[in-house]
Image (cartoon, rainbow, N blue to C red; front, side):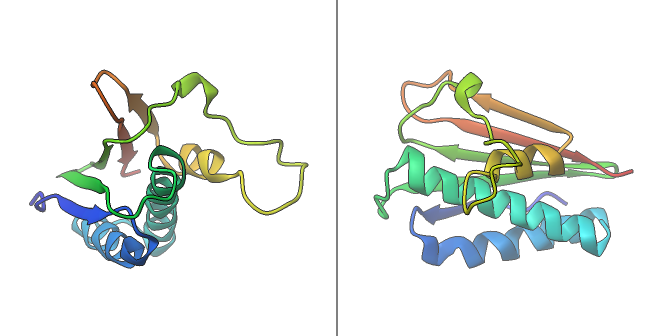
Length: 134
């Protein structure tokens, strides 16, 4: 069963709702606990990046998170209406550079099998994240 989309405001207070949503979706696919943890962390990080970068901290904007569940995979789509960025510019810093922050893109790419940024909108971006069940 594919759940209805979750719409939240771009306020970090709503990240707990995102984590609950991701955990419930992962349960539909029967992912292992460790995989569910990584999916939850990665989607949480993606939403935090939208809040920080696309909306520049404006807590009143919408983020829509949808999920499609199939027997062998789950796909999340995160849609924002903020500032677009060139996906080619989205890179993690060097892992040898030990300091807080800057590893969100690395975490997302390590967790999901497919990561796509769609900027073919007048404003905003849709981030598509696909995880196959192994």
